[in-house]
Length: 226
Ligand SMILES: [Zn+2]
Image 1 (cartoon, protein in one colour):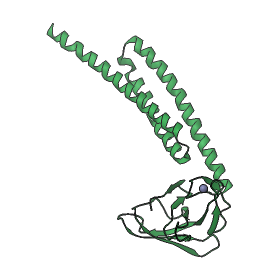
Image 2: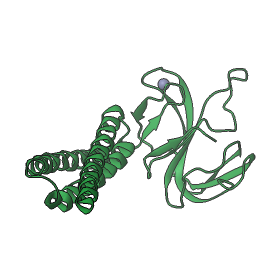
Image 3: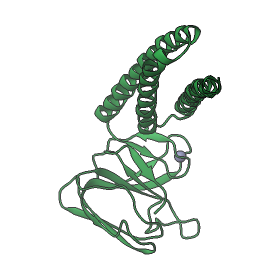
Image 4: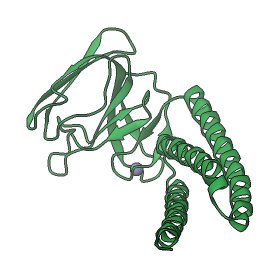
């Protein structure tokens, strides 16, 4: 008698553990999909999609593994969930394809530079290493120095230091981007196509020595923490 009693709650505990895990997966997935909806940054969307894909795959594997352990009613519930999750997986894969297509089209069209004032991205011809651009949105002017990274030092490890990035000029030769960095680290690797983007100083009316943005076209990222 006592043995039976002891066994029953254990069974119940297993069921509620599975239910809690299902709940967790649902929450995680909802959050992930919400984040995708709320971001327009392509490379970020791409990462979020990849994360969600992994969550869905884990979720499906979990349901399949635990299906034999649950009641008949829940078995049916699990089957419906697996069907729905496969639909979600399809949606994610379509989203990923869409991003790849857009990224490819953008690459072919030329670099999209970011305005340091309003953060609007717009297409430029990108044939010059150093050029002034006028934003198509806020109509302010800024300077862009772009090229392929040959080498960089002082980009990580410690704060308040001199950063030096050497880039291959579009026209041949080498340009050097030098500034006194306040932050540590930025994701720049040899071979990346980048732009250092400068604002005009409010007082001097001249371009400062510290870029407002370093944009990495190859990685599809940019940073203002320089
Ligand atoms: Zn602008």
